[in-house]
Every structure is written in C-alpha cells, then in structure tokens.
Length: 122
Image (tube, rainbow, N blue to C red; front, side):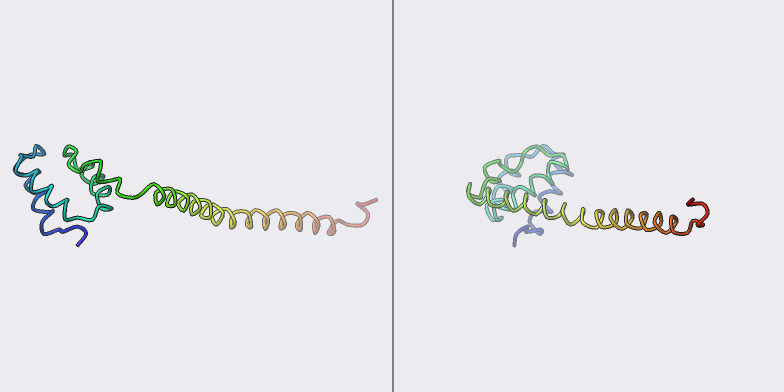
C-alpha cells in the first residue's frame, strides 16, 4: 500500500494535536518505520504535502532521489516534449481562428468592393 493511511493519519494527528509540530524521539522513530515501508517514489509528494502543513523536515532528502540519473534525464526529456506538444495543440486552434478571421475580413473587403456602384468606379 503506497500511503498506509491507517498508520500515517494517526501519526500526523498525534504530531499536530499532541506534539504541536515538535515531534518526540519516539514519534520520529514510528514515522521513520512508516517511511521504511513506503515506496521511495512517494517520498517527494509526501514531503511537499508535509511542508505545506507546517512540520519540520520529516522526510529525508535522500529518500527523494531514488531514481537513477538516466531515468531522471529521460523523465525530464519526456516532460519537455509533452510541454512542447501541449503548447502546439493550444496554439493550433488560435492560429486557425486567426486565419479564419483574416480570411473572412478579406472576403468582406472583396465583396464590399464588388458591391460598389459602377459609376463610383469612374
């Protein structure tokens, strides 16, 4: 179980209500035991969530770097590629709309020119 909520939630409840964000040695030991049973790739999201809640650094920095250098680079490339493709997808409808509007405007100008009376052209 990635986040073992039956264990995690009582620990966090004790941290905030009893210890007031100042964990005791015993509490830290229980939390460290919880972290040992949690998949490493859940450490970074848990750390970010806990930082927003206010307690001190409870998740060790070494837990966050569980992926190899090659995997991290691959994920970074995928992220950049996805961002580029997303921006292209967002820009395509805007570009089409702009082309449609400029095309429509030129049709209106052309039809207005054709609608002029012949004696005004002299």
